[in-house]
Image 1 (cartoon, rainbow over the protein chains, first blue to last red):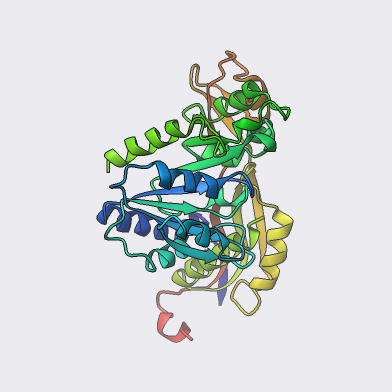
Image 2: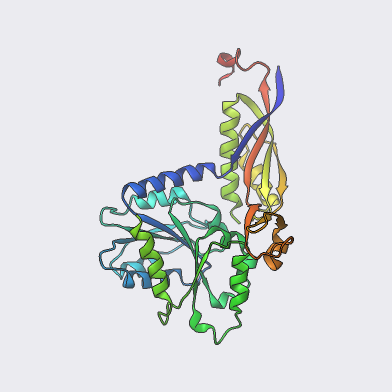
Length: 220
Length: 128
């Protein structure tokens, strides 16, 4: 005899990922490492932000990078030029990193000299926002040529981060971009988010980002 | 866009929960889907029908409960639909500071499962 019943579950579908992310967080905490998840569209300048960060951080801060891309080793190579430890994840079609990929990549790194782990997610304004990695903070790299409407069109991403770096402000004189429209779109759905306009090309505004980072590092 | 990963997680969670409840078959899964989850139900359905093959959830359906995206006003506490709030601020007091209240859920709420009538007393003979 069989009987049909409804079984209550009430569990987030990404619960397994959340648990792995919590393990990653504990591993980082135990090693005294601050972890950041850098997200943004392809071409927003995530890797350029990383390069600018290495060059401007205090010399005693040990940095490692996990690069997430659908294919290629290009970003890990770009980072390695700066003498920074890098692990490359290729998702082979996957549109985002998840906690298990980061867990595996962490094992490739020598964590002992590291204070700061920067995880560069797959370029995408949708999926990465849904998958916790175990990092302490989430950062969005947006850019002027993408347009001022992006907070309205990709609310999930703009909701999910604590700081938004608006890159390529050196292009403001050449493209249509209403700064008020951009910032209003963020304030109305994520009032706590900090917006830091900068240019990786000219270096303008980068100090604001470095100060944000140094302040978080001092709390680890 | 990431329906494949979500569907895989949904199946793992479903099979684990069904097994622990002693279910022999799953006929439906009930999923709460927030308006901002970015997931396309038709796409999950397609993966679901493929991925459940050969499992106790083969032939089952995914039933969705849509959860509207609502913003809560930081000033007066009233709720405004996401689309309105994002463009004009709080519907009630006009404040521009709003926070997400609902709409990002991706939750397995329940399973409709076929169980042995008395799984506790029959447990030994049911396994395998």
